[in-house]
Length: 182
Image (cartoon, rainbow, N blue to C red):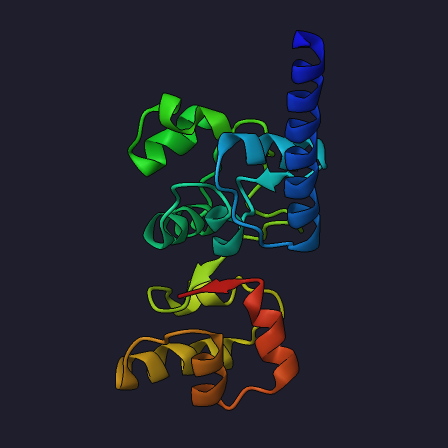
C-alpha cells in the first residue's frame, strides 16, 4: 500500500512538472514563479546571458522589479560586465543567497566593449562631437547637428526622437540603434 501511494504521488509531481514545462515552452516571456520553475526552464535549455539581457529577460526572474531590470540593462549598456552571481547581487544590492536560485538559468559571458555582439555605445545626450564621430559612418557635420539640436531643444528621449528631430532616414536610425544610448 505504501509503495502504491508513493507511486501515485510521484506521478502527480511528474505531471505537475510536465505542465509547467509546457507553459514555459509555449511562452517565450514566461515569468518564472519559483526556483523549481527556473530549474525546469534550465532543463529545457533556457539561459539568460547577464551581459546582454533585456528588461524582458530580467523580468522573467521571480522577485525582479521593473526598476531593477532597467537598472541592470543600463549598467550593461554602459559597458560594465557581470562576471558572476556576486557581481549581479552587488548591482541589485541584495545578498547572493537571495538570488542563488537563479544560478541555473543565468550565464555570464564576457564581451569586449568593441565587439560585434556588444559595440561600445555613446550616450548622445552627454557626448561631444569628437565622441560622436567615433560611431561608424557618422559624418562630422551630423555629429555637430546632433549636439546643436540637443543644446537648442533638450535631451533626446529615444531613437525615434533622435530620428524625428534630425530628419534621419530609417536606415541611419536603424544603424544608430547599435551604437547610441539615451
